[in-house]
Image (cartoon, rainbow, N blue to C red):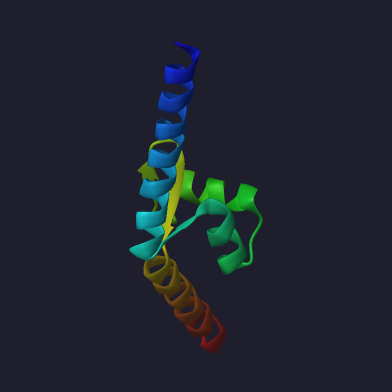
Length: 87
């Protein structure tokens, strides 16, 4: 019995890793990578998500971000900043 429960827990753990791996293959990154990519603290990243400023996706307990969407946000922010400077 103990062996079966151990096998089941290993299967669950590996299934979660497979979901995350395939998400990474589709251009998704996790919150820590997204914060590093944007050059902001992880806490700020979570605040921006709560405020609706950054698009994100939930996969189980994991929050994932599309790299391209983060680039789009950066470009839009840079454009807005440039326009404010030129005023």
